[in-house]
Length: 208
Image (cartoon, rainbow, N blue to C red):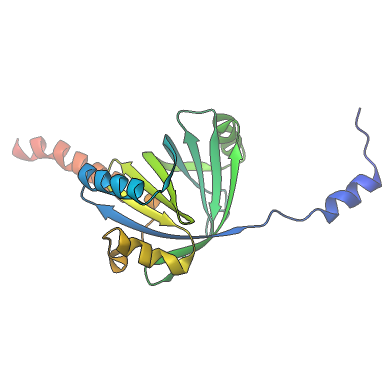
């Protein structure tokens, strides 16, 4: 049996919090599968390292209280589980169209148990959305090709100073980078679907 001791308490007090990282990204919407195909060909030609391909189910949380007022909390379930990643991100700032945020990211071995734990702690799933992601690494920059229900995207993540030039090298205009996160775009997409469904449901009644 593990017994409590004052030494254990002192050891815990000396433990430093996990360092938070700074995420810098530049995201673009592209036309579709043809653009992704061209980008994959370019990445291969330039010797990019293929990191992997996987599916995500993303859960965006609210609450409890003011816990998520200035922090975005998201759980990603990878390839149906059990592996996942939980991420907390602070408010965004921008240099041009490059989004910069403080981020803490932790891999979890059982994403479904983590989801249950968060719900028990009072967090609520505000909305969820699927994503298919293919990831490459080129000159220290993570290049991801993402497919969501509401579009095809390219995301560059790496040092702030190199992202605009790398975007240009792919034929992408840094000034046209998206400011919105996938979570925000997903929420807008879901809201539009609800409005469309409500309008369609009301149409027969109006005709009658």
